[in-house]
Image 1: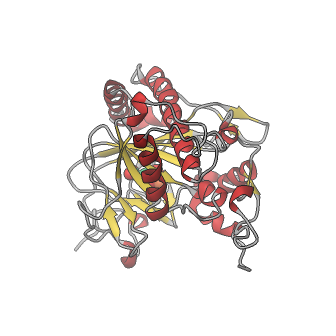
Image 2 (image 1 turned 90 degrees about the vertical axis):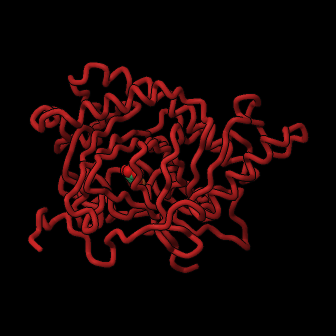
Length: 351
Ligand SMILES: O=C(O)CCC(=O)C(=O)O
Ligand SMILES: [Fe+2]
């Protein structure tokens, strides 16, 4: 068999995508429609909480505990906005390479377009455009959006989309806080002027899909990821109960939510950040749009006081979010394998 692709993309044998389990036994599907009729309560001990809201909080808590992942429907994001953003993304990635490279990341600013990134030292079969909610520049760390000229609707659509998805992220974080018996807004302050960003992932068809990954196995380092995927499918999640890879079945107008490393630390590992990856196929391009809901740069991330005790001491060292992000980006992030720096570095080994 002659190799049709650059060997840099080839996964070691043990990490190649084997057939995955799909359908039953995959991540929970949660209906957010109770939020269309009821406010999120400020406290889980409030006796007036409607049953459907208590059940929703319990379902989210169980999903975070058992899976670290869940899918939501009836989330309130306008399907037409989702259509519009998908159209813009497809148009952008269809542009000639030289047009896309006009907005490529560079040595100072990691945002923008790139087509070459490694996960765990193997190249990912993907193209990406990264955009932040709020631009940031403290003299050393520069995060400035590079807006493509084409398609013309891109900027406005993305800005509209970011603000809508950020609102949904706050709601999810409030429900997660309630599921931990904390006040709904307990975590909200960590996200004021947050460093959140969103990523447009585009996976071209690959002639050898069994040897490569669109994104190799990894955990998300942020607090919460709110991901939209098209109908092609390819996201695999590592099932906590037995370590099997399961394929998330695309459900139209749904979001896939996962807990990232920051929530794992805040909850002192009650909710764990779970490995996932994106497979590719030989026929269809696939698109996914994760929104990474991240703390404010000044946040010192550590287990929440309410969730540690003498019996359950802190399992993680405190770390500063800005320092963490800068160390991951490094001085030459173009060549960096971001996955080499993980929160496991902050895990206390003594317990
Ligand atoms: O494309 C996907 O479904 C997953 C992407 C992902 O995990 C990421 O960008 O962090
Ligand atoms: Fe991810």
